[in-house]
Amino acid sequence: MARNGSFTFDGGAGTYFGTALLGGLITFFTLGICYPFSLVLTERWRAKHSFIDGQPLIFTGTGLGLFGLWIKWFFLIVITLGIYGFWVAPRIAKWKWEHTSVSL
Image 1 (cartoon, rainbow, N blue to C red):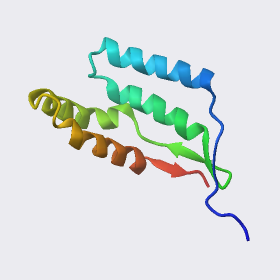
Image 2: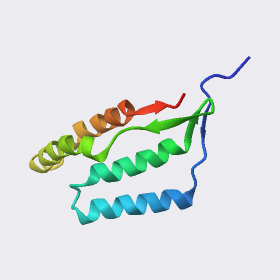
Image 3: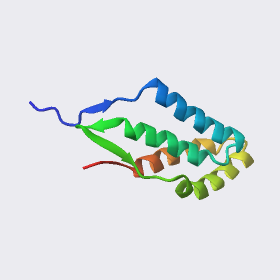
């Protein structure tokens, strides 16, 4: 029986460390305001190293595309003392999946 939906991942610690470090610096030095750009760096790295049935994933989201939503969410997180973060996390996950596809 043929195996469908086979997932593989070929990312390594070296490239992840560099990507995560750059993303962390972007987030830290902008006090979280530019987190969407950090998120996009990380998601592009993840997609670049992920495959479904041998086909690579592609992440099409942009930091600018998430920036407007993030500013609104960031404001709500601050004024609710972090409580709104419980609503933001699933919305970010949804946004990431909406901008991830399989290359054909």
